Amino acid sequence: MARRARAGDDKRARRDDLLAAAAQLFASGDGDLPTVDRIAATAGVAKGTVYLYFRTREAIFADLLLHGWNGVLADAAAIFAAATSRAGKVAGFIAGYVDYLGRVPELLRLDALGGAVERNLPPEHLHDFKRQLAGRLAAAGAVVDEHLALPAGRGGQLLMRSYALTRGLWQTFGDDAETPPEGFPLFQVDFTTELVETLTEYWRGALAAPG
Image 1 (cartoon, rainbow, N blue to C red):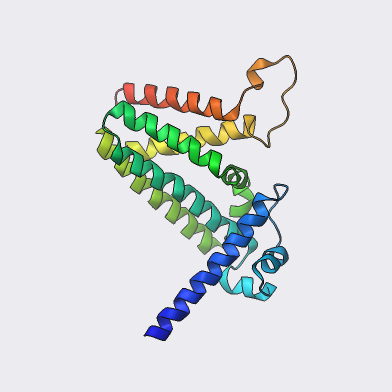
Image 2: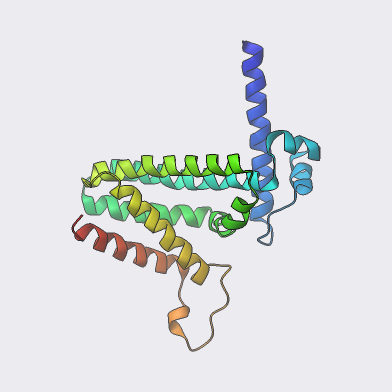
């Protein structure tokens, strides 16, 4: 029993090492997914070892996406549970959410490649990825429902739409967006400022509307 537990711990540690190596390479790279060869070399293992833990390169980055968004959702749940007033809960969530994305800028860069990642996942891994993400979103949404006294499922909808707004703003104004032309002030905005204002307006309007 003890040996099996130790073996399981060792496997989790090796898997975490591979994920850390992939995250490091992506964060310091040019926006493309690093190769399995580079991930293996950075982790100090043979290339074949990577495939003992992940069937494809994209499976590694799907796990990194899950980990990244799970951090956002965990923070959101904690903030909604801690603040006292409804306005304080919403303002705290938006501030914490934007702060998290600022501290983990590679998350949005990786998320922008989400379509390519998903297309190259084995079907069963893609299903599991979607199931886990949906489950975590539903759990965080249930906390929002409870603390804002919303109908069941409404909190998850608000979080999902906040994500969609974030993704659209990142593609338009984020670090990887095209440089805006001179003389077009609507395009010459700071992503973080725009994200805070957009989410504030969205949540204020959504919570004021019936249902």
